[in-house]
Amino acid sequence: MNSAEKYHKLIYFLNNKIAYVCGCDILTPNYKYNGRTFFLHLSLTTLYISAIYTINFYWKSQDYFKVLEVFAIGGFAIQGCVKFQLALMMRHELAKQALYLLKIHEKYQSHPRRRIALNNCVDRSALLFKLLALVFILAVLGILVYPVIYWMAFKEKVTFLTLIVPGTDHKSYWGFLFNTFYQVYLLTAAVNGLCVYDGYFMILSIHYTIFTDMFKINLEELAEILHANAFNKRRNAVASKLREVLVEHQVCMKFMDDQNECFATACTMQTWSSTWAMVLSLFILTRYIWMTGAGLILTGFCQLAQYCVIGTIVDIKNDECRIAIYEVPFHLMTKSETQNIEIMLFKAQNPNQLYISGLLPLNVETMTEILKGIYQGFTMLLNFWPSHWKIYQQMPVSMKISLVFLKSTHIIWVWTLFSRSEIEI
Image 1 (cartoon, helix red, strand yellow):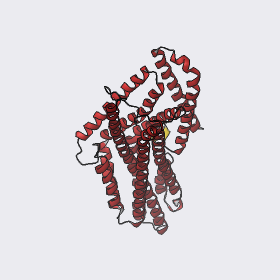
Image 2: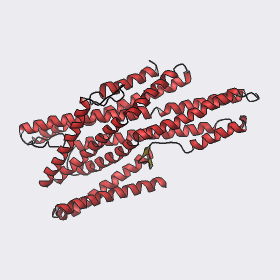
Image 3: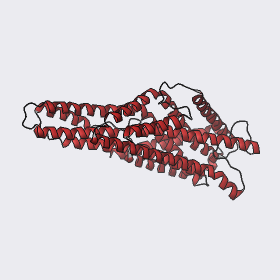
């Protein structure tokens, strides 16, 4: 099976098997908004209504840790909603990219060196997608097993998620059963939707390695032609290959610009939602066992790692391209040919990258700073909560909301300042 067949099989499975279930099979030709898409929109709406109702319910009963649980789950709910809307808004661009990459795979099957690069890229895409799906499945299984273990240990019924459907009594038999089935559906839809969008991001973005590998192969072929035509005044072969190199470099930059256009907002939302959910889940787990929080931490960390690893691969490939340009035999080139390479080298020294909010590069270094920020936010909550909790309980509701807002803003501000200062150093 060649790379074109592997790529088509992977995209077909993602779009026609997984994305079809939630009505987000946007790579299908002439895709239209359908009943499955509407049902998912309706489910998201009911999710937010249930979340607001649950927050109000536990706030009145002064069970504030349950409120924090809802906020932690809400981080992933917002992430899923934003990714769903982005997929629908960018469906034409994503479909064009997927079709363009398929044509690239088909075009270079007769080139041995390029065929190896294509096969390696598809194999990496399939492996990363399987790892991503495995993480989601493990997280959901952990969440589903939690109520069973809790009942066996304490003989008490608990739901998978801290969500109550308005108008139901979650402590009664039928109310508990209804809420349980509703939450199972939400978990299934969440895993399906997040896996689809993250799969699109991963498979399309990692194909940047194809263009950089072909760019390096073209540079190597240019070096071979230069050595073969070193003393030849008619340099048509050199000029032709040099044009191919310049065009290939433009293609690399254009492809990364397209990736930023399609996924920049998703990268930002992924970072903030994962950070928010992980901080709150860590804080809750210091107070009592909450398996759902452990699942959220696992999912958030692995999602964040996946995005940052893709960004790091892009950075590594940019460095390889720059080194490949340095290795071109400039001494065998004419002045005009050298000027073209110098312009390309200048652009390669300021390459396009995947960004978070257009400010921070999406890579493992940034992930390290984000994890430091998560730890800072977690320790701030630990220091704030016990010492001021009794005073906080006696405050009016308006003052409580204001204090929570100010404290959250302070945590985000400190994290942003810390991250940016560390990266600048």
